Length: 164
Image (cartoon, rainbow, N blue to C red; front, side):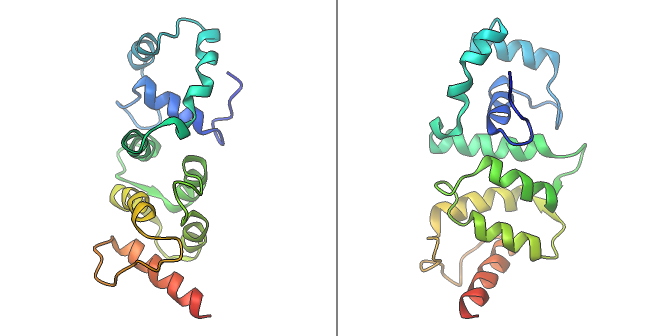
């Protein structure tokens, strides 16, 4: 398929569309064959012809949210309910761009400096919502918002950086 799974988001979109949900980091033979039938891809050439449609830019907001949650669930290790911060730092730039996540560059810098070692699904999911609701300059952030602690700390970090 000539895709680099370490940097090409289309690999993750393909796994999501194939229905790889039984076990993190894996796709079963049944999921693969059923998914290929659903995509009407009976050959490698037909699968390759689908590559342009695997760009997440074609997903609407609801579809993207489902895909985004899938990426977290698929990227977990074994039975862990969290993902190591280093993996999150690698995944976010693959899955998100500045259009969907204007906070991404700042948030990645914040993650590199924070003491949090693992990220939960709630934190992962809330980061996407945060990007939809809070302007990049944070001018509409209210102090009484109900964000997970990680995002509260990110907001404080941004405020401190703005004062410096």
